[in-house]
Image (cartoon, rainbow, N blue to C red):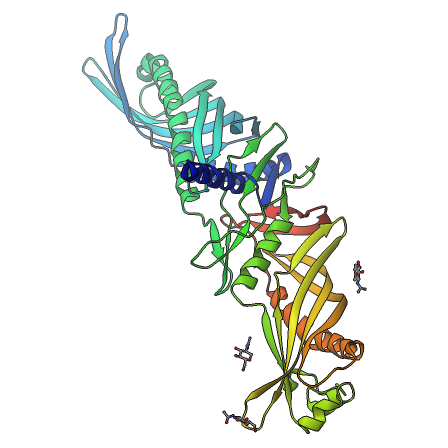
Length: 470
Ligand SMILES: *[C@@H]1O[C@H](CO)[C@@H](O)[C@H](O)[C@H]1NC(C)=O
Ligand SMILES: *[C@@H]1O[C@H](CO)[C@@H](O)[C@H](O)[C@H]1NC(C)=O
Ligand SMILES: *[C@@H]1O[C@H](CO)[C@@H](O)[C@H](O)[C@H]1NC(C)=O
């Protein structure tokens, strides 16, 4: 019973992870309209490659008898798509309709009637061509988007043939016979071609990456956690959006808080980045031991009057230079718990706490511990977006220092606090900022580039608003 209970608990925890997204995306009608422009070019080239088989048949003409005809070498010369509309099909996917399309086709004709044979070429124009197709959109078990053909219909309006070469009385005999089958052939081929195109798209989607390694420690999981939610306004996508340790996946002790992208639809694309996404990064770097740094004197800018040695610290801790005269020191800073980011309208705050272990570097390079401090700080963050990555910077807000242990007698921590403030300000923060500037890549599909992206901070998440270019 216990085992079953534990399993049930595990499954319910698992399902929480499955439904709450760390990253969200929204594609709007404007985004679809742009996609239509790109899609039309693809469709046009697809239809131009369409192969129409030769047509032959017999047509009975009173008095004259049977007319045997063959039409061959049929090629689509031009395809015009003046009117096309892309919209959302709520609950299913994307609907596409093309109307009043025109096609210009050329080919050769051969006729045999009684003992007479004749041949020539022809031009055929088709107009009033209509195709309506619905592209179903969902996700597969690997978290990739998946598409299917959720319906297609086509209709061909007018069809006009002009013959060249040969004797006009002959081809006039079978013109009527030709138009019907040609229309039928065309109609029968349009939807299968749409189906082929959808199959190719599905093939491309199968190859997209759903995770990306950032550095030796971390990778990001971008997989879809649920099928896209499609209304008549927007298509909303829920991505896992979580950092993991490379090689082994362990979950942080908190889950993403639900959030949504509300009432936004003027730009092509919206990307919601949750606190959870950022904090899962903090968790990974903390648990993999990456959140630590050793400060030595050579890392302190030359201009600084405060040096990392026993003489400089002597002003605060007189016992230090007495015991270790004129010796270099090292500070080992490490996080005590993972830094936590909070998003509030217009601001980002990062709370971090760490320990500072101070050592004297002895002549034989041995480190002699002298004191241990705890440091709690709040940091204000900024976030930037450029090209296809998100990056940030930090500025120290305030911090407090408390003495945990001293091997060199009691001393006033307040004075040390000022000194450490500068150490953080001049060395640690620039180091962290250099790392943050490198940024984290955003999910990319094919050759989509973000155009004029902006980022705003809302309660619990950041919202990236952008147009895209293919
Ligand atoms: C800091 O220095 C200590 C002692 O030399 C060493 O064991 C540790 O690996 C160093 N840590 C980093 C992050 O360089
Ligand atoms: C380094 O020097 C200190 C004192 O000078 C001594 O106590 C320590 O044993 C020495 N360590 C090594 C590895 O020689
Ligand atoms: C640090 O800043 C935060 C937020 O501005 C504030 O709540 C906190 O009291 C400050 N701490 C100190 C020690 O000034």
